[in-house]
Length: 295
Image (tube, rainbow, N blue to C red):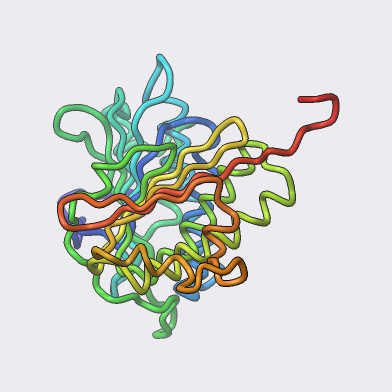
């Protein structure tokens, strides 16, 4: 499928339903596909659409991993917006870019562009101001007059919190109710990379479920951000912004052991930090299990 850039509409929203920022490393594809799977579950997405979405977006991200940064890894962002018209995805990097002829020549091989064009209803490849490449894709919202997913509420404007956080994966999502599947999927993928034991890996389910429940009740607005860092059998989560005083809701009012939340029981550290009229939740999980042979 050829692309006439003059007929491709501009992006529908500068405030996406979800945006993910990470480094372009080999494990990037696992994280991106996990994010897409979590979103698809929450939106009850058609399986065929999800397959097309995963394949095309993975090809765009794989191009970044393989070609954008010849000297190593670099920034990669994936933004997704779910509208009545379809699923809109933008993959951006700050690297060397796609060769000029790739945008119009399907014979260019090895960068996944023909695959993206075959699976997306619309696609555009363009240079970003200041360097890098942007791959813009739109996937259908209907088939035979029937919707292919449940459209979420319109996303809130970008509040800038994603840019204030750092980690192996940094996400902004709106509405807040969509946090649950994405936070859980990404946290488990990074916990696996950090070599969590099976028992401690199971604890990640409970902790991220508790964070998602707290976020739905206590977020300070209709958009929320989180960052995950992992390595050396450690997983660190930062989530916010929350309304002031909501951190007290994380603890049982009696102080009794059986009244404590899963966050307190299963976290090695649990902190609520206040700044600029909001709260941030910071959670540390460590796998203390000794591996066979003392490793």
